[in-house]
Length: 415
Image (cartoon, rainbow, N blue to C red; front, side):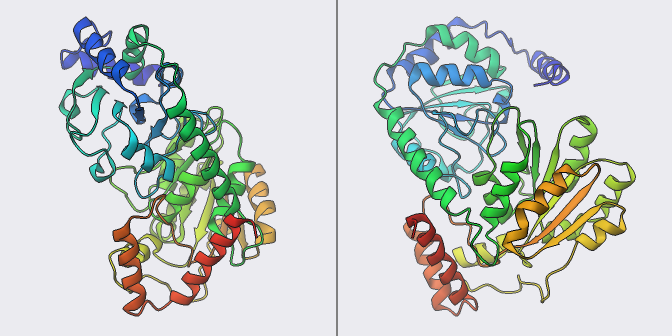
């Protein structure tokens, strides 16, 4: 957290009458008692813990607790940490979903995660919550110990009271599960897939970007690819519309962040639908000489709506655009920026690297497979039934979708 952000938070807490030093020993003792008694502790960390990486990792180590990260909190700890199990929800990981079902104690840090169907069932776990806003404490889950204040200071005050859990079986279980998950995700990042796999496109961005890069993202299927294939390492950050799922924030987010951090590499990973809504803002970036990099995941469709229709059990309707796919690289060049259209998998890596190396604003428009489904980390029985119903009711592209799913499984099997 920046000094300005810290000052704002402290002023707001003070206005609420909250002591950010956590001056209530009974709350700390009660929280420690719950966490020390847990046999299978999990941590759910959100955006309110972005400035508390070292403290989150220290608590996770003492408790032997795997860490789930919300999407706004993706940068709380590195993705290659032995404690990281990814996220939960439709864009989450299978280990993350399984941990929610398995844990007996949950420590929520700096999060107001709104999708309660993906949280543990009320009454099945004991909950400790560190939350800066008193109005949000206990809103999502029945909470044994709500602690009001800053996440970093709260964890630091709590840490000396925690007893080290020497049994690492719970943590090791999810470490192995995440190793399998990462291998499966890597298998989907194949340069041999044609049309271009969106997972491959995101992996090329991830590999070419610096360790200080900031990625912004639209809402939609692209959020799935970014959540799973953008790796938090070093000082990387990740921003998207986590609660509202606003359709086209990636580009304006990138412009604002580049203004705020002129020395950082800023990349917007956006969809063709979202970019079409706010493409005039790329001219804004060009005129202000902001060196943002825009990569368009062009599936020539409103992808998220397409898959939502199918998950609800209906064939897709009115969500695909007419061929040929738009070429937004021409617009970038007309703005005086770097622009390149990519339709061949063999061109992806070079195009992304050239754009990131360009001294100024740059845009790469990549035609990706429109039939690549953003499958949940763990498919529920109800989701599978609804998906099948969509096929039976006349899904128009069921052959292409089935072929893509088959190729995904083949890639994961290493065939």
